[in-house]
Image (cartoon, rainbow, N blue to C red; front, side, top):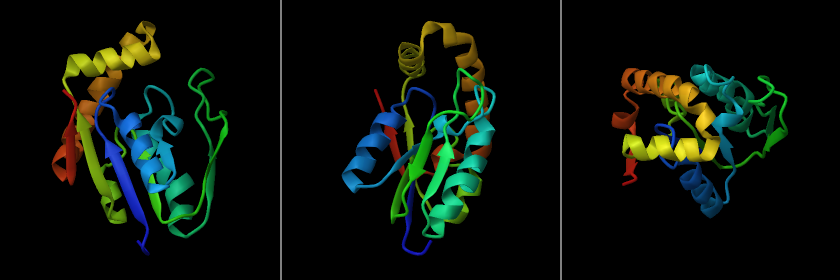
Amino acid sequence: MGGRRLILVDGPAGAGKTTFATGLAAGLGAPVIHLDDLYLGWSGLETGFPRLVELVLEPWLAGQPAAFEAFDWAAGAPTGPLIRVPAGQTLVVEGCASAPRAADRFEPLIVWMDGPRLGRHRAVLDRDGADEAPLLAAWEQATETHFQRESTSRRAAIRLVRR
């Protein structure tokens, strides 16, 4: 990848991906992209990575800065703030389904994060509110299907489990 390093932090909702990736990116002096800004809503799990490739990775891999409008979950459209991604050597991406098999062509370092289901579920509802429970249930089912199909945890070079 021309000396560029792509780090993908994947795992189920509530596993601590955002906190870990933010700290990692800060330590590396690299930008972090949150797939929450790229999914097209609660039913858009599979839209995050293709949008990442088109809007961020293609220009970044070419040594160019990238920019995209964040998805506004309340409005249901990508009308949020403009997210700018500077050109650089390292990029950290975090989010559910951030490391599908299609990512392998970019030779990423894949970090898998997980933890007990009840703790993860509680973390998401504490963060997003109890009203999101029905949507979270469907999201969790979609991610489980995705992770099984893509063998994400088995493809990861690093596996971290929150107890």
